[in-house]
Image (cartoon, rainbow, N blue to C red; front, side, top):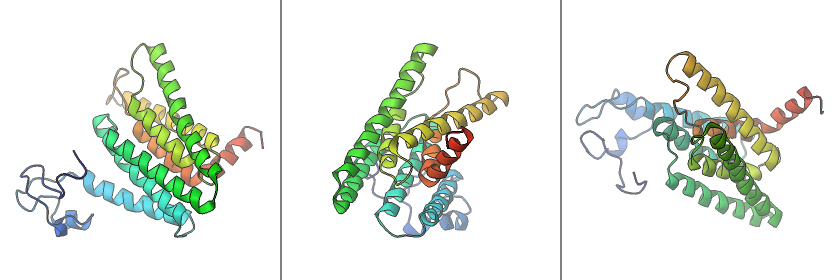
Length: 243
């Protein structure tokens, strides 16, 4: 659905417009006991879970960035705000809407340009663009090779666009560098996806031919790298005996 039309939230069962006091995150769900005020249809538990998860992630980002109110915090919160609906929608419907991807690209380029202007550094903007191209290209190559080996579509273009946006946002992050960030996101998402996929197959909820959305794993890995990428990379080098 469009994010601008209709302008107000509504109940998908009775189409009644939701009043502002019935649309307060978490609180309204509890007061309404998980039901629409008008038709008493059940409200999905997913709504308060996403609302609570968003609040928790915002707090984690705020404290991880040492409670500093600056462009970096805004940048990080925008990034998280984009990743949450992407992960949830892809997990439910196996699709990453173009409207969110394009919004992420516009917002990412806008704030990267603003920070580059503030710092007077064209290299900052260039690094972000390199991360954007490299992120999309790497995951496209993975999808291409995977499709050739398995002789079926291994990954959708939505994942390619998502990884390009991740490369843009993490490419200019303080630490680690753009290429280290991309390596860690790919590695973490592949590992977590393999673990979860195996568990789903073992428990009988999926079979070997069942599609598994990759977007949630990319999004989760991107948040981890943004918040703890530098110590993770250092620890990896230590375990590999390179540091």
